Length: 405
Ligand SMILES: Nc1nc2c(ncn2[C@@H]2O[C@H](COP(=O)(O)OP(=O)(O)OP(=O)(O)O)[C@@H](O)[C@H]2O)c(=O)[nH]1
Ligand SMILES: [Mg+2]
Image (cartoon, rainbow, N blue to C red; front, side, top):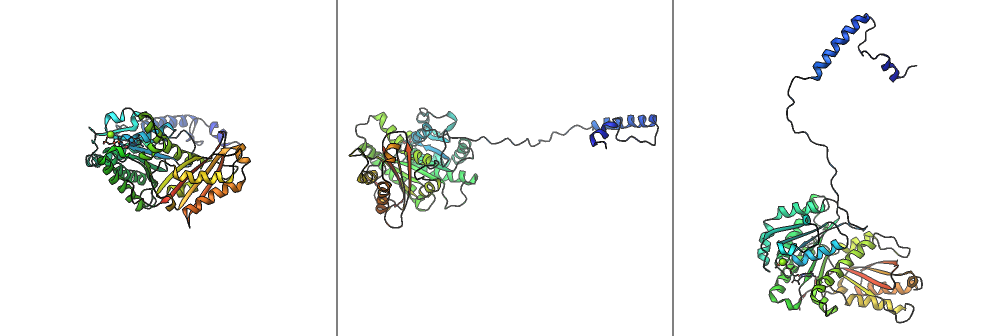
């Protein structure tokens, strides 16, 4: 039997070939058909100029330069805030934006020019109110700018602020609100109580004077209020005064770099580790989420100092306690925390020769410090770097009564 293809080829002249007509009649008929076809080809009307929807182009996606549990979008407001954001860029984060009211503060940042937004233009001169006005009147510009820099593929936003100035202090809380609008428009936040917007705020040193301290107070209070309402999480309160005490004699240019790198690297470490498997104990994405959603959080990192060649039980417990004391974050009562993550990272030699219960005792000690009903997520990972380091995040910390002494 002929195939459909063979059958249609067998009669190439016309689909309307009529076997009851002569060949001549059929050819005539064919000519008529061609005329009809020509007429149909040329409608004889001008095509109206209707704008037709073009095919949808796939949206550009921004990717970080590493694999992590969460895709953070980071925006720095004011000079200090922007330098914190720039530090994330250096670590490989690519959804990084900076906003300022003074061009000279944006210029030195080593992030792409398109990731910088200048509003106002002549600074805020340490005046929160001036900054507030400028940010309020540019809400839509800021929203469009952030949409353009971050695109839609991210999980959380972090707003970085130096609390003592004008621009960061006045504009930062407004950018937090805009970040919520952004998350809502992309469907990242679906309810008011599922905050996907957090903040890193830096408190000034004592030497910066009373105007700066009063700015910092008002801004930090506003952020703590957001946190108490459940609309901001996490909130990391970085204390520049403590950095001065923990790393004395740092030169001016190293000071900010040390402050910024220490906090951003810790953030990054937890974000990366929670995306990795461990042959010991893995700390996972859900563990990190509980901490990131718990309000005020504090980070710490302390190397385990071994008094002898092998790790002793007390070495780890000591490191856990030391970790809580020696951090660069504000003088907050970590014991009020409700949830913690403790990750021990060490070289294989040490890990394989350290009894599991020594590590367990360290984790249990953290649970005891936090008190009843607290949760401590744990993780143990190996690395090629020699030594053993204890990293912690404590979350759900109560707002400090007195941040500034
Ligand atoms: N951790 C950290 N804090 C910083 C850094 N730079 C400034 N700060 C702190 O941030 C506070 C605000 O300073 P700036 O960020 O320069 O101020 P601004 O937000 O640009 O505000 P104006 O210049 O007054 O409009 C200061 O009081 C410093 O304590 C930084 O790189 N890292
Ligand atoms: Mg400035």
